[in-house]
Amino acid sequence: MRVGLFLVVGLLLGWLVTALLGAGGVPWVEAALLGLPLGMVFGAICLAARYPCQAAPLATTKPLRLAATHAGAAVISVGIWAFIGAVLSRGLENNDRWAGAAGRYRGEAPTLVIVGLLVFLLAVAMHYLVLALEAARAAQVRGVEARVLAREAELRALRAQIDPHFLFNSLNSIGTLTSEDPAAARRMCLLLAGFLRRSLQLGERERIALSEELALADDYLAIEKVRFGARLALDQRVEAGAGECLVPPLILQPLIENAVRHGIAQLTEGGTLRLAARRVGGRLVLEVANPRDPERTGRRGAGLGIDNVRGRLRTLFGEAARLEIQTAGAEFRVTLALPELMAPAAEAPGAEAPAAGAPPAAPATGRAHA
Amino acid sequence: MPDAPERLRIVIVDDEELARRGLRRDLAAAAGVEVVAECADGFEAVRVVSEAKPDIVLLDIQMPRLDGFEVLELIDPGAAVVFITAHDEHAVRAFEVNAVDYLLKPVDPDRLMKALARARERLARREPMPVAALTAAARPAGTTLSRILVRDGPRVHVLPVESVDYVEAQDDYVAIHAGGRSHLKQQPIAQLESALDPGRFVRIHRSYILNLDRLARIELYAKDSRVAILRDGSRLPLSRAGHARLRGLLHE
Image (cartoon, rainbow over all chains, first blue to last red; front, side, top):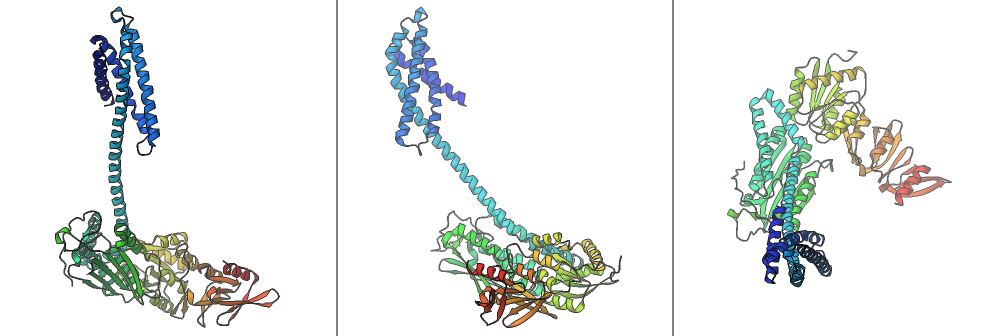
């Protein structure tokens, strides 16, 4: 590649020098004998001009210094080049056939030097162009890589969010059920597999319909219901139309797990998990509330899921989203308010999406509430 | 086998009915054991264990009201406790360090039988559970006690640390004074001191820990001898070192 470029540039310049010498009255064979080697040498010089260009990037070098660098390089390299021409023409004179070659070359040397300077500066400009293109390409690649890394990190975080406690306890329930009620054990296996699969799938996407997030919560709560029995009750109120709103995947799930693990599981008599979704003035408001044991505040592990959700909301929506925690007496409530986003197909007038990036269309799954 | 009881009496403590049923089922297949009770939360466990006096307690860690470690602190240390946890790396480390047996969920029946055999050996050696070491290790590093649990017969009192006025050492016990009442607990005062928030509780004397919020003033009582006067008028002796510690905290 480099060698090919060198040959092409060298030959082109060789032809140029030959033409200049020939036009100035130098006999054609003599012009070619001088022109071709000089062209090759100048080709090498032009290609080597890349290095001063790299050393003095356009963006960060002061204009004066830039001009000085390249003018200096041009004068020195063209001077040396012209001198090589003089030596070559002197060499030609060793043969009687080329007598007077040095004199003829000297006559054309000023033209050669002027054209040489121009070509050198042109080469510098070309190099800057190429460097800029390369930098742009590299930046693009880096950008893509960064996005991929960010997505991977988020996915890892999401996977880590699947509570190991929940997994092992569910497996324990299955273990008991296998001996006393194999059909129930099998149902529980299916529920668990469905939940895991769904949470992985949802985690891959950028935005999902709230109804999908709620369906995941249903799977989760159905499993927890096997564990907790009558201790766990659910009160779910999703306002008409809220299910079609788009939300970041697994934004509710950590809150629901929190409510079960640190709220209802801590009460001997259990309690009701309240889930609500409604649209209020261009915002989607989600609420997860649970009763809690007032004697056990600030237990270890609590709040980790909430911090995680808060962090994700901040990265995704900045100031446009809010997470509030209220503890009124024996109730613990987390309220999320985020910009109301709609899938393009179901877009309501006036519900413009302020978030960056076009959200992928999400099929709104129908839901029936028991 | 040395003189372990012929028939091991077992109490199962787990808030999940399904988990209790699983354990009961596995134990039904074991020889020489009898499940005498099942409990669904920590308070019940403390009451039932103090009444039934079982040989072995199968104790889930994550439970309503009192967790497994809190239950351990409140029951007779003579019973062999086998902890059960689904996933608690912190607790598992504490068990490993203190050579205490534990089971992981899902429970492996073979592993359960081994745990019973080991518990039988522990009972035969009359080796008490390392309660202090376990409860200390169970508290995550950098956290302090948020409540003090005191057993009064079968009942459990929960004292949030902010309600505590001062603690007084009485032989092997501490008397915890809170809101005009005093609760006795079997625990060395140094151990309680190390679990309390050092920014709030100060050891002002060999026998006293004071809640800083309750301090009204310090009075010179005799040459080189001071007393701390509490907001409710109680007077506590201040040792020289205690006075220095108190001054250090107040001037921070």
